[in-house]
Length: 284
Ligand code: PDD
Image (cartoon, rainbow, N blue to C red):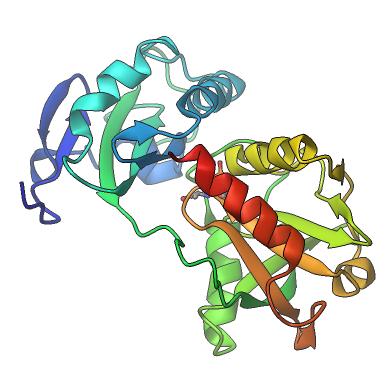
C-alpha cells in the first residue's frame, strides 16, 4: 500500500475511514478551546514501544482533566491496531481525545457531551545514525501553564518557544525551558545531563512524564549508572559533561552547545552513546 497524506487510515468516533473522510465539528471543544488530551506512541516494525505506559498516561491524563475515557486501557491497543500503516519501519501512532462537540461555543463546562476520538499513524525516521551530530540549544523562560504533566493539546507555550528559535534565525536548534531558576524541560522533550559520571534529570513535578525518559532512566540504572531526579540550574547545565533530550520521535538527542557555549567536548558524549545503543535494543 502506498500512503499519501489523504489516504492514511483513521479511527474517528467509533468508525474506521481514511483521514480525508474525517469530519470534525467546528464546535468541537478540542478545536475551539484546546480542550483535549493526546498521545504519541512510537511503533517499530509494527510493534509499539512501551505501549502499555503510553496508554496508562493517556488514561491518567483524561482522568486528571475530567474526560471520561470511552474505552478502557485494555481496549485502546485493539482499537488503534487497524490504523497502523503496513510495512513501515517506524511510525508514530497519534491519539487525541477531546471533551467533545458541544454544538455551540462556550467556556463553561458541558454536560453529557461524548468525547471525540481521533486516531491515525504517520511514518517517521528515527535517528538511526550512531554518529549523531548533536544540536545547539538556547535557554528560554518557560511560558507554559502550571500543569505541564498533562499531555494537553493546548501547546501554545511550547509552540512559542519554537517560534522564538525561528525568530532568532535558529529554527532547527532546541530550546531549554527555565522555571524558577531551574532548567526543567524542552518544548517537546525531557532533559538529561551528566556530570562526573552522574546523570541528572528533572523530577516530574510539573513536566511531562515522558515515556522515553523513564525507559532511559531504567536503562541507565540497569547499566549501573547513578541517576538523580534533580533539575539543574543554568550554570550547572552549561558546566555539564553531556546534555541530551529525549522523546518518542527523536529518542535521545545530544545537545552540544547551549547559548553558544560548548557542552563538554562539543560532540555527543560516551554516556549518551551507551544509552543510545541500549535504547536501540529495546526496539528489536
Ligand atoms: N512530545 N516533554 C514534552 C513537553 C513533550 O511534548 C514530549 C513528547 C516529551 C517526551 O515524552 P515521550 O518520551 O513520552 O515522547 C517531553 C511528543 C513527541 C509530541 O508532542 O509529539
